[in-house]
Image 1 (cartoon, one colour):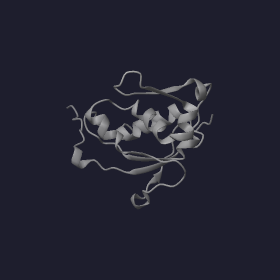
Image 2 (cartoon, helix red, strand yellow):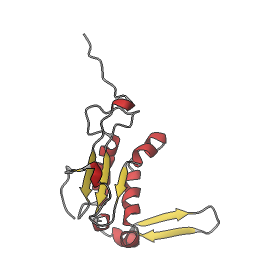
Image 3 (tube, rainbow, N blue to C red):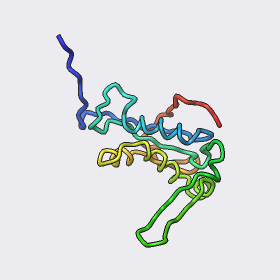
Length: 150
């Protein structure tokens, strides 16, 4: 007798709130772990076509670690549709001025593209500093599998 695979239904998904401290965590490893939690791949009830992930709050985004020569060598590009309007920013400038956007971009790059990916990305909240406005949700501290430093 074969066993039936249980598929999660959108209304039956139970979501938790987690808070992650990004201090001295490598950006890529942090982003890949956050993407797994946001998609729900850390749960046994994971279903690819259903958003069964949890909410994630990232604090201290400006203290994220970059290895090697990425502070000066890594570039972030924004292009408007006007000719010659390509804006280029280095990773050092992003950490100094836009650390929230830097972490969001890293996580977004590891999420699926399309409707489901956009829905999953809305559950990520990134903050500069140790304060956030989600105390009412009583978030749990999420310990990441990779605990290394720089």
